[in-house]
Image 1 (spheres, rainbow, N blue to C red):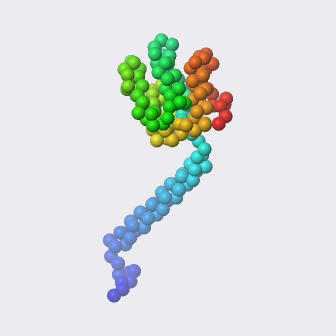
Image 2 (image 1 turned 60 degrees about the horizontal axis):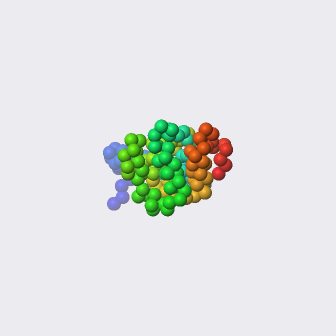
Image 3 (image 1 turned 180 degrees about the horizontal axis):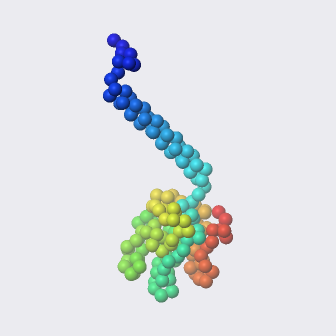
Length: 161
């Protein structure tokens, strides 16, 4: 037997209403996610390592401790070492305790990105983007700046990618 619409109880109608609302919300969220993914795809040429370091502020006691040497070594390793070796490498911390920080931790400890949004650079994007030309260019600029201090930090406007 078929029931007509008027034969449904109020609780049945409420359940259907909630179900429809959940479907609508799911569709809206799906569309928003698809839109965000599509717009992120248009920026797929971005590089999280370059974005993080470009225009960042270096915070270290580079002239009075061995922090500057650790940072220079890390930058050199970023240019020369294979990704798999860098995943395993550990660097001295602020107090010169050996083998404390990963390369990404070291960057987070010593470099403050220009945009707070970039402060969440993670291992996945770091290791995916590290060896790309945009990242390598910014790393070289930082290494040169560290070797020849006094010229400030690499500015985004001076480093076209």
